[in-house]
Image (cartoon, rainbow, N blue to C red; front, side, top):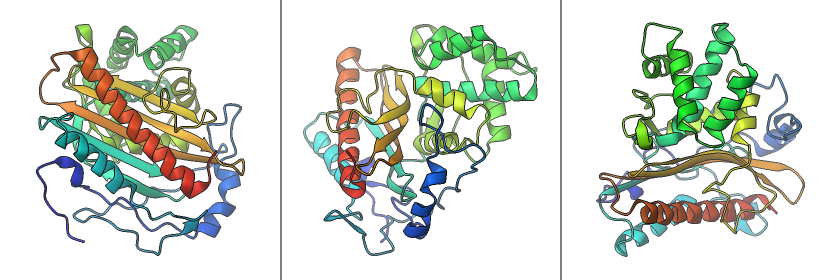
Length: 342
């Protein structure tokens, strides 16, 4: 199916929304290994490398290459991407999302190893506070190199950076990473990420500290970069992955879970929000629980970005946050039918 052009970005998926998955029977047989967890219940068994991501093919709107699987009377091939696109287009027609705003969405199901939604996934957007886990990762690489140490004080600052989204704590770690080289803090964070993970941070650009007032407009990343980071995090492929999971799992409000009635209370979440006067977003891994007691994790990335600052910031932030919540609810409802979630 050839990619068709449209004046609105939501109907331009730039990578497949689904790819062939390996034998489901073989995959389910390996679930015990995949979901053997720590006390938090958030990590695969130690030493499990995890599968590589499915290949991404560009230039076409991907359709399922196999007949949809039937689960509980619901076709797993149901097009969640089209449903989300229809919802966003309806908001555009109603004037709720104007033409000067772009959105990006990426949803990946670890169980089927499929991209369910990839809309504007490789387009870089403002990073806002969603790049803070990237800063943490750069710091942990310096710890692994032996050039910095993860002290109790820095653990508290790490929690403040991720759980409370503290900008001073973020600048502390950016400056700390910068002390290990002749580069500036932001440049060294960016360099470290791309040195160790060139395949993950392809559209990421970290060029500034968090400025006064939190106006982080110049740091950028794509939905696909966030997903690749989360994918590697889930499979413990990053230094101090489990500590990163712990701090991203600390209690906090989330546009993916908080205030989303469709998402079951049993669902656990690792996440980071991001908000500026031009961007509203949330990235995370939601670990849903099935009726069979198994866990069904999936990544969710939702980004809405304006070309200019919002006049009424609070109202704009709350309204766009509600949009992300609605899409998160649609996603859980879809997966609830596919995997028989609680």
